[in-house]
Length: 293
Image (cartoon, rainbow, N blue to C red; front, side, top):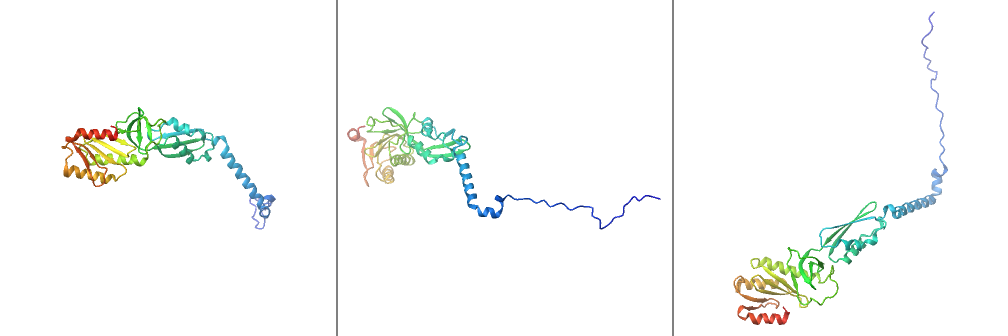
């Protein structure tokens, strides 16, 4: 008799036992009712944690300023003076660095600085980009060479071949203090001198400018043309009106390319005073007496 190999399936028989239920007990301080009841303490601990985190970030030496990089767009700004002016911010927490204070310090030492951009490079580097006012003229004051920026600041520097010399009359020897990186002339007057130079060049290009004189006390600009004629402008007056009178004089009365005119005085409104070659000696003598040429 064969043995039974297969066991008949009994539908009601259970092959799997039910898993035992695992009861997880939640700590009381995580239970919703407990949290609601003690919410103010949770807030207190959260605030304490945030304060500790902030204090760690602010005063941890890892986040203090260790490296300072100053980048100049022009080479007329003195890089050594720039670093010296902001040395006090070293070891300051990077999060607390005030870019406005940095800009004020830099500009107070070197008045030619126009724009300052500060970038924080974590964890400990400060990058500062400096832009200077444009340079406008070469000049000599107290036997020292300078470049004058458009805002009237004197930069100690050798003459630039790209700029004309502005001869300053009546001040040499009168200023005894250090002029370096200081605003000697108001930017308004320097801007007007730049404007006069541009207008003369644009309208009398073929004549050419030889020399420019600035009289700070009189607020006047005298321009010597290459033809030998001197133009006298009043910086306190309307520059466009003075240029207009000059062009009318040049086109309708005397061609300055040909005519030998000693000087043309454009300072008086609606009038032009000029001196021709016949009275050259008297005219030059008058100019010397008035302006100490």
